[in-house]
Length: 327
Ligand SMILES: NC(=O)c1ccc[n+]([C@@H]2O[C@H](COP(=O)([O-])OP(=O)(O)OC[C@H]3O[C@@H](n4cnc5c(N)ncnc54)[C@H](OP(=O)(O)O)[C@@H]3O)[C@@H](O)[C@H]2O)c1
Image: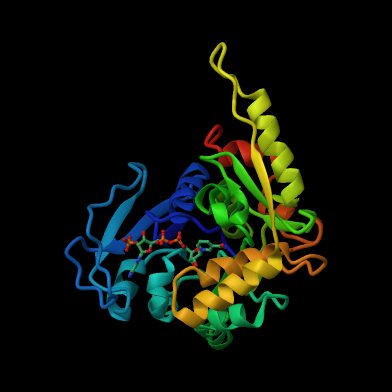
């Protein structure tokens, strides 16, 4: 397969789209951003409300009215080698249309929207129901590749987006603003995570190795860790941080909680129709002791990290990123 050079990105201004786009540009790909028009009539419930800014180095920005318009999308994708979908969950209903457009435009690779747990066989049954909606586009990509071997796809399974998630979700057990930690059960259950840096590199790695990554989910990981190791790392950051003279960092306050409590909280919220039940369940899944429910690959060798060029990161590095002390 000739090298992939021209890449279109959907969702480039999003949480993961931003580091992915930056990594593609840094790696020398020619990047087109496909985005909804500012006054777009996207059939999704929430058209964009703010004007978006994209990196100056992108080759072009193409606006479409709707991610459901296959003909318009195919026109936007014409002439590209590959496309990456990293649209937010709210756009899930459009993912199959993106696959159809990529195939119609003659793209050689479509990176389907996973950036999650892939086909995790160890997830809780409730999560399986939530994840099933994502399979529609994955199945469509498989069908398109079966029908036309020139069209190929890849899914990037990242597991926990660890530096971003630790900062964003105190429910994971670390409130970085208030320096409080809630350790679930013994705090020893390990899980794998991929940092924003690793997520960007994973997509670069897929496009640099089209043969080795064709028609499969690749397994990304930057670290395998547990809560106790992360707590040590957060506390060490405080010790090592260059505080202003005379200024003492507050030690972290540590409390204890349980996975059973998380599961019960999730169940009650779901029954009451209250938001947050999925997050509770995701965290319960992460720390469910002895179950390895959130280990994308049990070792670096079992993952695609080396192939994709994702570096191994330490708990110290991840904690620094979660605290906003490192990029
Ligand atoms: N592993 C995990 O724990 C984890 C955590 C978070 C996310 N994810 C996954 O990562 C992927 C990307 O998520 P993200 O958080 O980066 O996405 P995001 O920031 O919420 O959104 C990315 C882009 O999607 C488009 N978009 C947003 N809402 C839309 C709507 N209602 N209709 C149409 N387009 C819309 C926007 O692009 P334009 O404005 O340019 O159209 C937006 O910039 C998803 O598959 C998500 O499920 C996984």
